[in-house]
Image 1 (tube, rainbow, N blue to C red):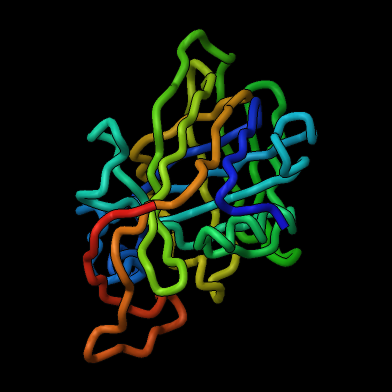
Image 2 (cartoon, rainbow, N blue to C red; image 1 turned 90 degrees about the vertical axis):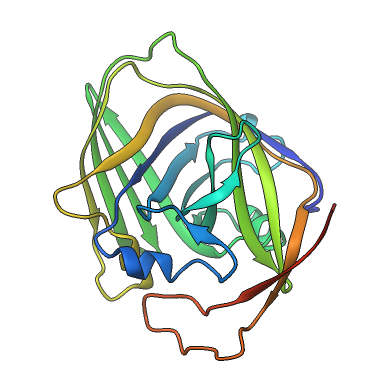
Length: 251
């Protein structure tokens, strides 16, 4: 098992990363623990990427991954503008990556992601345990000369504590980009709570044939997660509610 405190680098993976407004904003808000606030419009984000060859990572090998979550308010990346996110699902094909991410608090699941590009069309699909869950169709242009660089911030729960990580990223997105459809294929699965509204409203996003990023070493502890006095029984589309006790930040 890889040491979760050791940073890792991934280079030149194919990436589709975007955000939408959900069909059920209240179900999305219920996925965020007490003490954190979802973005006012309850934006959902999703990143699907494929690492085609083991030479593209510092120790993970080749793998595919999709993570989804809820955009947060008042928890920004270092630029003070890009909002942070709460991971709700973290689906990867690699047992090595699952173990590494689980030790960092990620809500890991076993599954595969494919990204198929043909001319100006890209189709992505994500399954969980062999069952197709999400299908996205995108119209794209050529790889442009603009580079997207910066940081993303994601929060997770680890052994009763709320933890935060900062992920540096450099991506080379295509020069035109349009999400044509996003399908959530299993209404009975908890993932369905994150489905987009109809008609589809995209908040932001990009497709990059080459995207590089790092898993940072260490985690920042923001506080303890504790059940509130009156704990609700979660429905099929929400996670248990938790309270946060603030404490000094540490590594």
